[in-house]
Amino acid sequence: MEIRINSIHFDATAQLQDFVTKKLAKLDQYNEGILKAEVFLKVIKPETNNNKHVEIKITVPKEEMFAEKVADSFEEAVDLAVEALRRQVKKHKEKVKGN
Image (cartoon, rainbow, N blue to C red; front, side):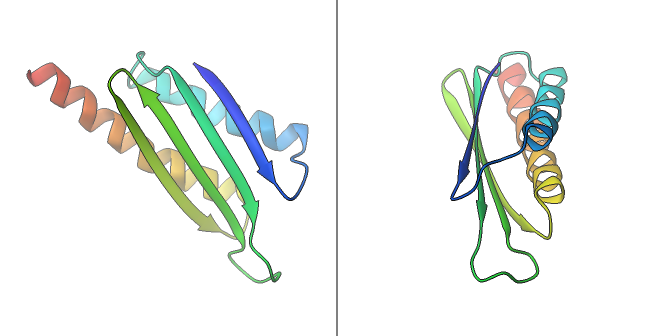
């Protein structure tokens, strides 16, 4: 799976990028057909609670899946978004198997 991480208006640390990559790699166990993942990390201004915004779009053959979450930290938002995508990937795989 090709993973592209875009940090908007800030520079993501290598540690954060590694975290995102590891979390997304776990989706492969639910569907090996994931072609690519595109991640957008953004800090919402002004500085308040729940100001870390994460959008993740993954591409499987003939379909795209999307999750968007906001949380206190990027790690928490990535966890929530990956969990939402995990459910979508499993549902998609079951739908494809049924056909």
